[in-house]
Length: 300
Ligand SMILES: [Zn+2]
Image (cartoon, rainbow, N blue to C red):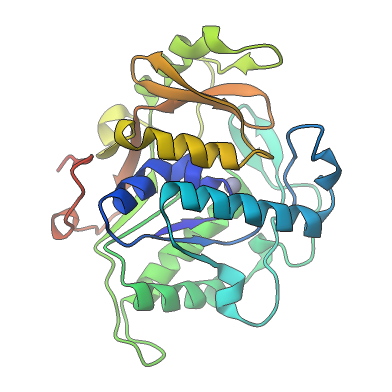
């Protein structure tokens, strides 16, 4: 099960893991906390959706459904639907603080996900965990991958929910999740991939800075202890990325060592899709208790 803040994160952050799990015939689920209604929109054709929260939410819900279909994920929930009060959890928006670092937006809407009470959101997510009983829960590290406030909040909610789900509740037995995975990028591998793809930025795009600051998900390479081989599921991941056309552009496979594809988000910065999707095991995890698909390498 993957827990994400917005449509597109499931593919960008955990696409290879989900597609690998689905391809192995194992159950998969994605929980999405908002509908991405405050984000920027790529392309002239759909530019009118930017700033129109309800219309953008509806469009991104369809993009998400197509992406999940490409990845092979059949079980999807929006967290506010699980809470079930009719209240919508909305994208809180963000502001860039620097390259690869986001912080809070100057203003945010009523119902912004960052203002949703952690206990309320975590109780709902715990209900899903006790029901689906996943072997692995994947999400963001404490910094939210790159600092987006919704990602940071999603991390807090995920961790609290895993704790709550270990105890019985609402008539269901407790479920101790064996492994929680935090998305991780290998610092040296990422810089090498930035350098190796710099020449591939076409018109209107700028390369990633191989010397610049890295997002919060970046850790020393040896700390990336769970690595998913993206090659066997590349077609599925590329199709899922393409489905998120209002958020992801210039998607294409490339023949570069350590890199399987490139893409750009609305900031027009070319970024590599690494040949191995990386994770750290959150503290307390028991990776030996999980039967991992062959394409997942776990370093003890
Ligand atoms: Zn996001």
